[in-house]
Image (cartoon, rainbow, N blue to C red; front, side):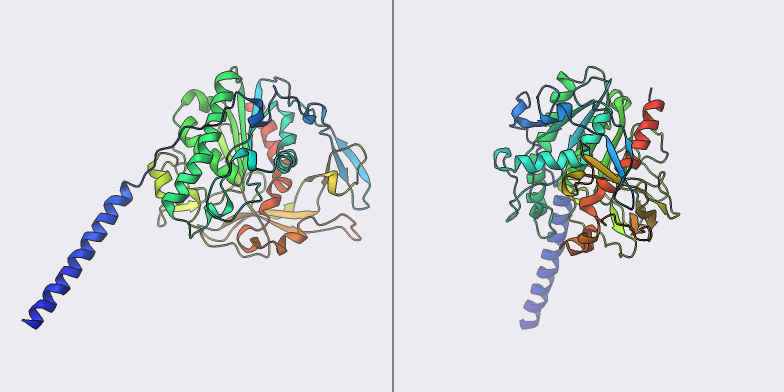
Length: 404
């Protein structure tokens, strides 16, 4: 009897575990959340950082770029027309990255509790030059804290928080689309958290709408890791119909890049990112699940390919350098080497190496990034736009001529 009871107990444990596994399997397929409606009023200019109906200092802001040579002298000026308040037939919708002082727990932060001036400066540094193409629309939104994106955060909790941030971006975009677009072409751009939210917007609002896809010149999603597709393909991961850009003049596609040092080992997959969250996938914000055995990760490779070459125009605001009187932006040409680097199917990046001239006096803006606590995982993440902005603009120029 004693052994019979032990056997029955053993069988019960097995059945219980099998039942539990089955329940987990069922629940995983049903893991979904309701995407909330935003409570932010985007008819109010208070909820936009930049908007053509909102007077700001950007109205008459000088966007010309002073090219600084190795002797810290102005070599030439690259003229950039400021169309941030001019209807050119093209609009720019820009979503800023995480800019918060709070990061204690996974949560979203109300707009009034965010550092407004720091957000404004970040958008200017990353996106103001895109005003070359037309009116700039840059919403404020309830940002998720960095803790929200950590591996230890419960997936349902993460999805629910991110969904609030996303609901704001969707509401802002729909307000723009319904009230201000007027049939214009659209450039979508963002960085880091902004890119992830825009990736969801592309899937939720644009991917299945042929008319909206025809308006899209490009979507520049910088600092967003792990854009995937079937191996040797550039379509079909996060979006069903929107591909990665594979030629410089291609329209209606996604630019994606992350920046690392050439000597740096590329990190392993961080499954805490939103595209791996089953609640977000099952709720319609990602097209399909990443397939470890059949997919690869992809990034931009058409402007800078696998061959090492000089980086054209590393562009930064001059505020921290004071190298150009009267110009808000400066550029260092050929200060770095760059290439498209692939170390296997799941490790890909824009790879840089400092390559100064003899007696070069230009500052190496990337040097201090190695001291950032997230450097091993992020590389030159904070500098993504400074590194690739010129290459992006060169490609947008070609796309505009080809997107008519």
